[in-house]
Length: 312
Image (tube, rainbow, N blue to C red; front, side, top):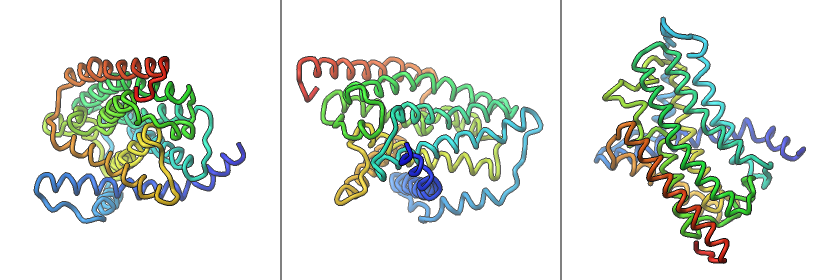
């Protein structure tokens, strides 16, 4: 426990700024690949940093209606939550330590950015923001079910271990059920990021960015930073629980970077090759198709363990 607390103390501030930097770089990669898909040149490397600095220098306008205190605090909730997730995920490969139940802590913290968006949109007093918050709430209820089933499968294959160190040492992706769980988690991550085809809450062409419509200046920059951090931490989470974990020694550094880039590119390709779907279509997609796929994967894992079939 002392080693864990020391690691948190030592890594939190440098780790936080490192994760923040990598998150903004991930945002640049996303914008650059998107531009290439659309036959554009794309932004320069430091453009995400310029955008954040510009927003920090602008005025914060508070809505006349709604709860101003909640409106201000909501973006901080998501930012703090995803920052803690990033530090926890980096703590395990750097110090080779984790605590029992850190997987549960991470799963709970990953819901905070969506919760912040819901609270902020509802607190703004804008009907379009409230509509976006309502959509985000339904979307969370949709993708959390298959996401948790897939996480339960990972825990089952790891011998019911719920610490990240044990999960990262379990070769989940080396089986059919693991590959199916990877697909389910990846689709749920796409929805957590609010990327197409699940950008239903934001929907610029329909409800003018939904929950973000009243946000400006530093508060909007916090939301943008939160999404950049999610773009880094969510692929790292997938690698940690499904693909052998992150390593910072030898060729493991290069292989970890390759795995991260592969997942990030898949997310970006999905974003740029699919149209936005309606909220009822998203509910059906996650509750029926994704949940069914997750249940099938769990069933294959149970059968494989019962009969000693490793590839299941």
